[in-house]
Every structure is written in C-alpha cells, then in structure tokens.
Amino acid sequence: MTWLRDVLVDLADDSPQVDLAERTIAAHHRRRRTVVSLLAAGMVVVVALGATAAVRLLPDRRQEAASTGDLPARGVGPLSHAYKTFCEPARGEAPKGCRDGGWRVVTRSGETYHVPDALRSLAPGRTGLRDSPLAISRDGRKIAYYSADEGTFQVRDLASGRKTTAAQKVPKSLLGSVSRLMLSDDGRFVAFSKVPDFKDPALLIDMRGGAVRELPNRWVPIGLSPDGATITLAEYSPRSRLRTISNLWPSSSKGDTTSVILPVDYHFSPLAPDGRTVAVIENLSTAERPCRRGDLALMDTLTGEKRKPTVISGLPADVSQISLRTWLSAEEVTALTMSVRCRPASDVPDDEPAVIDQPYRTMTAYAVNVRTGKARKLATYRAQGFFEIVLPGPPGAL
Picture (spheres, rainbow, N blue to C red):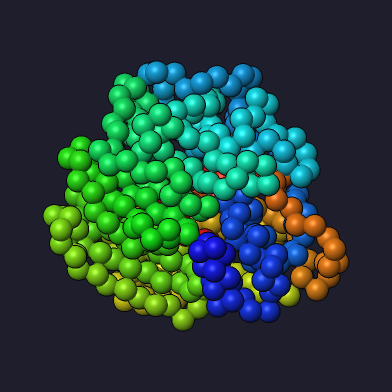
C-alpha cells in the first residue's frame, strides 16, 4: 500500500526509536490525532479540562449557540473559526447535534452552523479513510471546501451566498488521509495539497479564470502573493523544508523555485505580512521526552536564515503544545495552545490500546509579539485536535 510505505518512510526518518506499527496508525489518522499523539507512539495524553469554549477575540462568549442549524443561503457574518466533528470520542461527549466528519463554522458574534455542502471526512475505524478540508479567508467572509455535490472545490461568499466552483473535477478518492486547503484573501485562488501523494499533484486553482497550476505534493501551502503568482510551501515530514515558487502563471511554465532544507524540525506559521518571513518554533520532542519545544524565532523563507530566538512569555506554565496560525499584524502571530501532560513511550504498557477517536480538548489562542515574545490571550475553543480546527487565513505547518 502506497500510503503505508510513505508513512513508514516518514516515521523512520523522523523518530527511529519510536514503535513504527503504532506510529503508522497515528500518522495515517493524523487529521484526527493531536500533535502529542504524533510525536510519540504510545504517548498518553491527559487533557486538562477547560472552561466553556468561546469565540475568537471575544473570550467571554460561548463557542456554540443554543441550537445549531445549517448554514443559511446568505446573510452570514464574518467567521471566528471552524471545527470538524467526530461523534464517538474516547472520553467525554461529542457536541450536541454532532454530524460525523462534518464541519461547523462559528461567526464572530457566536452563531454556529453546519456546512452541509462540504463533503464529510470519513471516520477511521468506522467508515474508511478520507479527509475533507476547509479554509477561511483572512477576513472571515469566505470559505472554501470540497463540495459533495460538485465533486470539486467551491468558494462561498457568506454574506451574498454566491458560490464559485472550480472548473476542474477532483475525485474524492484522491483527497488523502491528511488534506490541507488555503484560500486567498480575495477568494480567487484555492491551493490544495494532501498526504499520501497518489501520484496526482497538488493544485493551485484560479476559481475565476478556470486555470489550474500543478504543485508538488506533501507540502502545506502557507502563503500566496496577492496576484497568485508566488506561493510559499512548508514540509514537516520526513524533515522540515521551505519552498517558494514564483512565476506560477501561465500554468505551462515550470516557475522559479527556491528550496531550503532545514537542519532541525520546526513548526511553521503562515507567511508573514512582509511576504518573505515565517515564525518558527523548534520541535524538540522525542518518544522519551515528549512535549518539548524551542523558543519563537523569525526565519527567512528564501534562505532559511533564522534570527535570534525569543522566549515566549505570558503563557500558562502548563502549556505544552503550540500551533502557529494567523498573523494579526506585522508584529503579532496567533499561537493556538493546548495544556496536556505526556508520558514517555517506555512508561506505557505494551497492551494499552491506541486512541483513534480523540476526546474534545480545550485550546486557547494567544497573540504573540514576535519581537518581544510577550503573549496576550485572545480566545478559547474546543476541538479534537489541531488538525480539526481552522482559523481565518493560511494554515501553519505542524
């Protein structure tokens, strides 16, 4: 099986001391496991229970309204975030009205809606293997997703209800077990990539003009220039790399590519507003010493040059996992955090079963000043893991 070979290669390069059998299962279901589960086989995560989740930038508001209906045809305000629901968590309860593999979007004012047009992800262990991605524009006013009816990607303006469908069909069988989607600020371009490769390429789709540009697969799209001509990609497995491809149009051209192979493993933010920089945090975790990370630093995407690291201050002492997300300004980047307790793999009994359907976890977002490292709290959410929650703007790469 191609995906099995790919995952085993990734894992062998990434952490050879980890039990590959369980890591293979964990990586294949990466979209439904926390970063902690990915870092070490057999790692047990004890989740610290948090307060009722809230809307981004409104920390005291509830994440979910009293009832959750389908997304209205029009008239929906800007989004705070979106999250995916699976309905048989190992511990605790699923959200009320849970739809297995379905997406929910939450507005800044707190309304919560199902997105029935978006293809549902399949639940490992119950109905098969398929990830269905969703992206939110930076201003929160548009979403992109794989349309179950159209058999390809679609962009929807939430206020007007206007839908734009990609000219090229994308068979749902090729969505992969881990899919990533990026929507440009103006809603014109959609970038899609996934793991495993399936031999078909990643895509950059011009939703207005109908043109399609093939991209290298397995890379996470983390930034796009306003004209769609330059894209920034990050890869985190089997090793951390950055790639910038410019002169993308016309689609017949090869483009101009700059690649950087990094000596250590990093977590990446989306591309910064300057169009050349990303924030990074070095991943220091191992099977026996999980949940370890380095300090925050800025990195040049074209050279890999890293500026002096900055210690993040203002986070609770028990924060152990960080996912870098949306840039709020040229000075602040969003750090989505979880507070978990981890056991080394050697402390876990051999017969302890792996958790497939993760419990819902509390996550807290902070704005971190990339110059000073000072963090300020933004909001709290609930989701099953970092791969199951989307914030406005391009994704980061774990």
